[in-house]
Length: 252
Image (cartoon, rainbow, N blue to C red; front, side, top):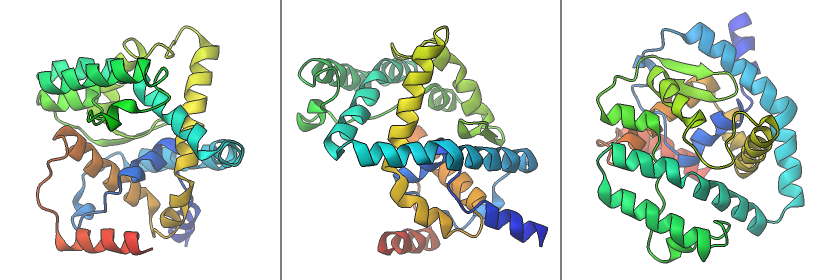
């Protein structure tokens, strides 16, 4: 009974950065149970903590944010923050030996920062420069660094040992509004970004609540999405079970 009670308590969304992972829509694969998770007791504790923060703070703010700002303004905020990540993406394009994607990142940043009004309007996509994102965790993977165990970080959400290490440079080489030495700017930057992302994911709360064990759902979704990001979207053939589950989610 304690086990069942614990699972039921975890049915709610587990924090803004956990919810972000569902945006890409990756289904749980048939081999989900085979995932190595030696830190599961710690991870489940962090999952519960992140869930509590989401329920108490992030989600209520996201609901208010969505009610106050119209869709067009929220899209502009999202575009602005995506544009700010261009320097990080560019550096990792180069570190991964992808000059064509690096040029694409430069083109997008220049177009959106000028014609796109500092990035609030995604003009680049309309001109044929699709968006892509790269980070240091992906670069370490391309360099052959093993992922290590799955890891849930406080507030930051799902990760692996490799991805957690890749987050360190973000504090020193990132967008202009990421200032670790300026608490007010950093809190405002991350607070607005977190609320904006969470507001765009409110509609998937029902899908999360349908899961028997949301922890496993988020874990497998994260790991599959990360693998897809590392290989630039070129994934091996999926199983029939995963395709059936994705279709079920779409139908719902």
